[in-house]
Each structure stands twice: as structure tokens, then as C-alpha cells.
Image (cartoon, one colour):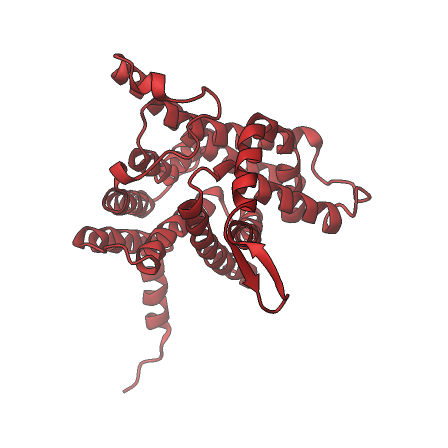
Length: 339
């Protein structure tokens, strides 16, 4: 593992954990700000890429428009389908558990599409990590106190569906949507891996174009963006001492969220050019898990025996996946024996 990969993993974990803190602060103040947050993140990365990556369109992309559009369609469709599932009686805990299954989906598609073969240790590690995250998620999410943020983006309010006598039927549809999104996300990771092998490694360019092209899609959320921009502008003012100015608190948290999101996603794209898709998925999965634990500690939520069991399973699975025990054994065997 080279220094570039180690640095990218460290900054991914650090940036994403900070990002999660600011996200929780925003959601506490405005639970419906999901679309506004996502739009600002995409817009920031697109503007940054326009200035520093494409040099205002003067630098020709190394990867074709067609290839980028495949990535964009997979990325945007995955996001829409994931949000859409909420409208079909899918509770937040179940949604989070499905997202934790990304490692298994990636491994399955790796076998089917790339004809990869994994060792028994890899299978065991992925299973341990997935079960560990499911346990922590189940005991960290209180369904009765959670509200859906993105229930109305495609099919409208879910009031009619919830009141329907065909509750179970719609729940099955929601499960199908979640499963589809899970495998679409895994397929996107594999497509990125194949694309970089064919076209070369261009993480900054890929980051820019995959966030620029989807921006018109946010027209679907125009009303939500206007509504929650107004809420943000009318939020409590907070002074920024070193700038000697006042700023609405939601916009301040949103700015910090966008900056840390860039740090997180930028290093994820570096990882996609340096590592196999399964390894990238492992890092992203661990990021979600560590963010969950950090949230529990930072916001003083209860940490039960179930959390400890889940934590042990995740870290055990990670050590097995990275073959740490083999490396330790090799280092010990290399030490000169003393008489």
C-alpha cells in the first residue's frame, strides 16, 4: 500500500466523519434540507473543478463524454432510487441496513462480471463487517423518532401509500428498489475500476464531470431547494469573529459540510484510481461505521453491549480483509533470533 493510498484513506475517514457532524447539526435544525445539502455539495465541486481542473473549459477531458454519462446515469439513478424507496413504507433502519450490504453486492458482481475469485478469508471478513454494521445500525436508530427527509422527490407524499390496505405489497416494491440501488451502486464501482484501467487514472477530472453533469437533474427538486434555502436564510444569526460578520447558522454549517464533503469525496475518487472497487467499498463502509460510532460519542447517544459486539465484528473483519495478521506474522518471522 503506497503513501498516496494511505493518505487518501486517512483523509477520507477524517473528512467524512467531520462531514457527518455538520450534517447532523443541519438536520437537527432543518430535517428536510437533504436536497439543498446535496445540491450545494455538487455545485461546490463543479465550480472548483471548472476553475482548477478544466481551467474554464480549456483543458480537454481524457475520458469521453459517453463514459462519463454512463457513470452519471448510474450515480444519479442510484441516488433517486434510494430516496424513492422511502415512499414505499421502508423505515430508516431498514434503509441503512441495506446500504451496509454494499460490500456483499460488490463482491457478488465482481464474481459475476469480472470473474474474480476471492479467498475464504475475504468472504468471512465481508460477512463479519456486514453483520457488525447491521447490529450497530439496529441499535442506533430509533424508528419512531426518525423522519424521512426525501420521501416526496418522485412520487409525492407517502401519505396515500401509508394508508393503503396494500401495505405489504408496497413494502415489497420498496425492498426491490433498495436491492436495485444496492447493485447499481456496486456496478458503478466496478465500471469505474474498468474505466480507469482503459482510460487511465484521472481522479480530479472524474470528480469534476460526475458532479457537473447531474446538476440539471436538481430541477426535479426546485421547490424543495427554494423552500429550504429560505429556511436557512431565516435561521439564527451567528457571528464569525475573525471575519467580523454575521451569518445564518444553517448556512455556516452547510458551508463547513460542503468543504468537508469535498475532502471526503475527492479522496474517495483518488482511491478509485489506486485500488480495486472492493477495497474502495470497504473504506467507504468503514467510513459509515466510524461516522456512526463518532456520532454516538459526540452527540452522547447510548453505547450498548450490542454496539460493542458490532464494533468487534467490524474491526475483526477489517483486520482479516487487510490480511493484517499475515503481515504481523511475516514481520515476526523476519526478526533475527537472539541466542
